[in-house]
Amino acid sequence: MSEKVPLTLSELRKKAMSLPLTPGVYLMKNRNGDIIYIGKAKALKNRVSQYFGSQKNHGIKVIRMVGNVADFDYILTDSEFEALVLECSLIKQYSPKYNILLKDDKGYSYIRVSTDGWPKISAVLQKADDGAKYIGPYTSHYTVANSVDEAVKIYRLPTCGKVFPRDIGKSRPCLNYFISQCSAPCAGKISEKEYRESVEEALSFLKGGSSAAIGDLQKRMEQAAENLEFEKAAKLRDRINAIKRSLDKQKVFSVSVEEQDVFAVVSDNEKSCLNVLRFSDGRLTESEHFIFDTSENLPESRSELIRSFYSFGRKVPPRISVDGEISDEELMTEWLSSIASRRVVIATPQRGVQVQLIEMCKKNAAEKLIQSLGRSNKKITALQELAASLGLSSIPEYIEAYDISHTGGSDNVAGMIVFKDGAPLKSAYKRFAIKGFDGQNDYASMAEVIERRFNHYFEEKDSGTGFGKLPDLILLDGGKGQVQAVLPVLRKFGINIPLFGMVKDNKHRTRAIATGGEEISLTSKRTAFNLVSEIQDEVHRFAISYHRSKHRKKGYGSTLTEIEGIGEKRAKALLRHFKTVTAVKNASIDELLQVKGISKSAAEAVFYHFNNEKQ
Image (tube, rainbow, N blue to C red; front, side, top):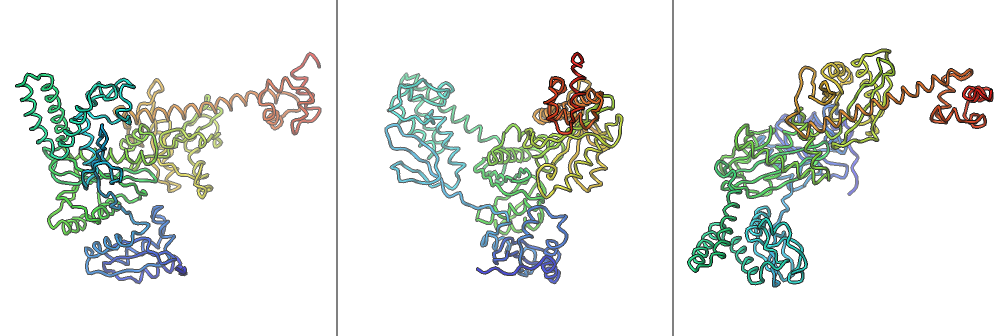
């Protein structure tokens, strides 16, 4: 397809300003004519013109999309509801690059039973031509996987990779045998006949359900007791109890949970994860998750996610619980109700079991996000706790921390450290020598350092690295005084970055987080507390090591400048070359002459200064 000459930003804005103030759908296109974004609007002119005005209020995703727009089309509708329905239909048809797309690609699931002498049961996503027996299909892989897992535990079937009878007698039983979750055929603890009976019973449990399985086992237990087969009766009793324990775990929410779907989103600065828990008959029947690019407008994202989720024919329950505000809630409720042909409620829980469900959903989303990004679970948990404690909208992936160090107001320096994904990023550490004044003033020192840091940002922001990268969170070593000294600097630059102080106790240990007017205790948030303590200790170490180094070099320099003909410039040149005063002291005249800027007379002066006996 030949490329179309793209309209300029001013031409796009002029076209947008000519649109009517009526509901409709707009279709953004690139220079090839491909649709890259579809949206709906209550008033087309107002909505579309926002894209092509000032870019200051737009997030990264919108800026990138607008940069690829060559033209746009639009379709008028009679109402905003009609625009929403049409938008969903067109998104499903064209799958535009910049819309959030949650594809329904789960397919069907099966229970697989191998057909060898020692068969194994497993949950699989598709059938294979391997001679095994397949039971299904089932629509929910979550339900199949959990049911198989329960059956394998109840009937004590092995889950390891050992092959029987090949591996029988070659090893001792593993931990699963000792916690009654495996019958240990590897160690000859069960015969082939008994093993096959266990497999058949497990399959009956999967096909008939727990009630039927309990009834059958109850009869067999009573019969065994009548026949005085007490050991057999005891095994059957244990199996019945295992099934009942399984049912108890499934009924955690059954008293008060109705048929509903629960949505929660967890984000860092690049990626987000939506997790959906689906409940029916008081039981969790399915869990799904989706990874997508993080958006700056979370209420809009939630609305778009819900629309995308139900656009592929998924059943809409009577209740949908979400973890926060969604845009166009009334319109969404009307649309979902029309799909379900009954009233649908969208709720944001505030208390009770429903809040527990939201928290469970968020934990699942966080775990899936961690797995997708390959990050440490412990570190992400700490960052999540920190974000929640400080009221941050997303995980602070990139944290900068600052500390001031001096000796009685002399040799004032500052250290800046960076923690990325909860771990030190030493390549990004920076050092500052305080230049604006002499004497001791920690507040003024901190303000100077922050001002210099962000002056560097505006010089290097195109690089996106080092000073050219904005942090997600700034931590200062100190209390509200340091915070109040730095806040005006950030306001002057028009920078809106969360800023807090790290408060120490009288033993120089982390005690709390300070805002401009109060303190936030972290003692109940152990992982977040440990992370802040680690950051505070590291920035203190870095700042004080720089101060000591500078103080030591200053001492060395003053020793050299006492020598006739050696000023500060020559002293620095000697230290750069020899590294230490001791090395200068032990150098010969010829070695001293190798230093740039050192004349023969200066070299002799230095040599004889440290070798008086030869003078």
